[in-house]
Image 1 (cartoon, one colour):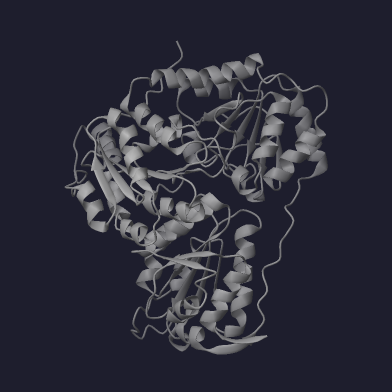
Image 2 (image 1 turned 135 degrees about the vertical axis):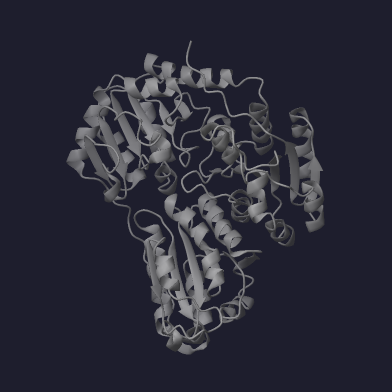
Length: 542
């Protein structure tokens, strides 16, 4: 037992659960937490964001890149409101982010008396977009609340959690014992259902595996590779599943969602589909226009997702790594050659899509980006037109190296998420690719990057417009465009004003050299690239 304030209890409970990095902004009501952090600087690094949205997205990027929960600390009222978009992104893409917010004095909550930073229902706002939320009104309850939040984020489907603590509770004292949250074993699926699924997959002539983000969160990449090789099954992936199988593996089909006819043909031809860690959502299926796969076997740790969007033949509820290992163990018979005619056909589709993009600026951009990153570099994207090139044509070789906000469509995700990823892996190269509109949502976080020596490189494709919105207006409203065009700053000079390196290129041939110079600068850097860049051609097979 030790005597400590509520702020100290927060910090010690986080420390007990292995937290070494926190993102946030101090404010009037949360200063007891920051005073406690002052004495823990050797153990916990605090990264000072410039806006709470940025803090939340940094924690989001940290979690996606590290596989551990990201933590953000904000103050009351407007600060708590500012971070909610970031929390929504974490909820939709199943990312464990813990937000700890302060609150007004406990006795005044809910009275609408007009206190500084008072919000009518701050907890209710957070509860709407988190997996777990709680208000703590006693110092003695803080350690248990942190541990409950930790379990909520790390057991079952990973999603964000929220704790709010009144300012007077953060300043009060009590005698506490701090222990970490218990570790729960990952759940396995029903053995009989696993055996049935293994028989279907073994007997299939054209099996297909569809891997989502759940593969990464369970650490299932090795198990997925073993199963794919045992079946000779091509592996397609969702946005969050990119890197589940290295893109140069002979069975890697890569990003393959609803849209191009060659991809649709594979879905129709497959006689058994194993969907792992994906809820088969609107984006993935083109608004559920993807025809129901034959023999669909769905693996998900969230039982509520099994069969929610597509009827399944077998639903296996459990941890992805555990269940995939169960299926591998249940297989019998000789292992087929990875280069079956079916696998060769699937890989031929991918080659065809890449050939259709040859000679384009978009392909040159992602090729230069990939060359600069190497195999373990990390890239982030944004809800921008240029992101389609990352999705379809950027190779990904390692788990947790491709961070993209496709589920929630969070504009401004790219730069702060890249800073969070760099904080998680300071030894790796990190590149953010974004549009001009999205960059300006959180471009001020370049100041954070400089202050904390988070040396990421940001590529801004500048077409002076919200490109995706302009294209939708042109397509759907007779060419009429309104409120989509932008007046932008001089991006390289803006970067230099923050203390970062800035440069502008005129042609895509200059990008490899510009990336070399950016990394050689030894500080955060920005490269402006001229836009617009046309969408990837997703041609039909001849």
